Amino acid sequence: MPGVEAVERKQGVRASSQEADAVATLVATARRAMREFSREINDHGQHRIDEAVTALAWSIYKPENARQLAEIAVSVTGIGEVESKVLKNQRKTFGTLRDLLRVKSTGVIEEIPEKGLVKYAKPVGVVAAITPSTNPSATPVNKAMMALKGGNAIIMAPPPTAWKATKPTVDGMRRELEKIGLPADLVQILPSPVTRTMTTELMERADLIVVTGSQVNVRQAYKSGKPAIGVGLGNAPVIVDTTADLADAARKIMLSKTFDHATSCSSENALVVLDPIYDKTMAALAKEGGYLATAGERTRIVERLWQDGKLNRAVIAQGPEALIDVFELGPGAKGCKFVMVEETGTGSNHPLSGEKLSLVLTVYRAKDFADAKRIVRDILNYQGRGHSCGIHTKDATHARELAEDLDVARVLVNQAHTFGNGGGFDNGLPFTLSMGCGTWQGNSLSENLNWRCFVNITHLVTTIPEDKPSEEALFGTYWAKYGK
Image 1 (tube, rainbow, N blue to C red):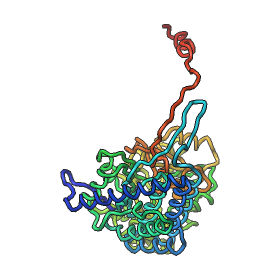
Image 2: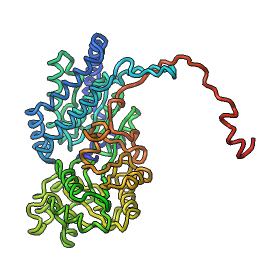
Image 3: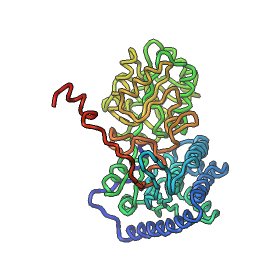
Image 4: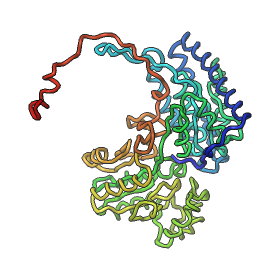
């Protein structure tokens, strides 16, 4: 997901000696904490790791903490909505903890006797976590839980404008670790003011980089020379098929689009509605608080949603009142929850086809399912290829067709995209706040970020009865068809 901040490194600019020393000290401190953690794991096994992970989870899940950190996040960054962030702080953490407590992550984690293989999980080392301003609390905790699950230490590098929100989050994690007798320095944060060069220095000194946020940061991480996991741009398009339960679809779309004022990379950015049900779908969305902009209002939205090629900070992740004011929407918009804008084209000449990080939802009318699939592909080819798309339908063949034909890592069926894409209690994706987009978007990961990203695997290999087929078994069909 694109962060509001871009912590980028100018070509040829290096960290000052003071910055380099500060980062070096943090990394050395993290390594000492890891050694102590390792001794604890050797003495107490998986149980000690799971205590650490649970401590981190409780630091933000605890109701008063979840609310306080949500309030700080909105106050510091000026984006998002408190109640949504409270829910995010708790729901994402609870789901991630569920996932982590169900797996073994140290020592022998898998045995395959018929293959003669035994797999041992081991830490990757010090993790550099580049975190976004859109989730200055939930994302750091999410990454820290996964990192410590692997026996690692982690250092947060938030954008400068989110530091004052991420710092109390890190402080809370550190307090909980101390409470259970583990080194607080397993979780650290870059000192303020965070700079481009300091963040890059951390990337170069860490053992693994995990980046959520600015695509500039993702690219810099991949250039660092260190193993890096970067995630991609959102801009999720969702089809409303002719067989969809329109009331259910509209309700889910509204809940998803309005959550945290559309800060999520998984928020619906475009709906592609099939022609036979277009009017009924628009009516269902209006019933859920969607306001359809007039032609004149649409012009102002396009002109004012972007300024000098960048999203307007006056409407990014702001409530509907801000949109009504900035876009000068008519009386009919009063009390709306989100704004719908009709579009026919895609690409740079049609900016509404891109990610908007706001309560603006682009709507397309498709002639049939094939046309809907074409529109979704065109949207993703412009922005968000590899990330995700969705469909509301009762036709499983249409859902499978999207999965077969489109270059995305996730196709969600009959789900509120924001809630399901990063893992849900009613789907099988692991809980996360970081979604890989595969090589389609230049990422090394096409899965949801998960604990397996934070361990190395040693394979113990023993002999098995020889498994060597004959030449005829392997080449016979080829020979029969093409000759030797």
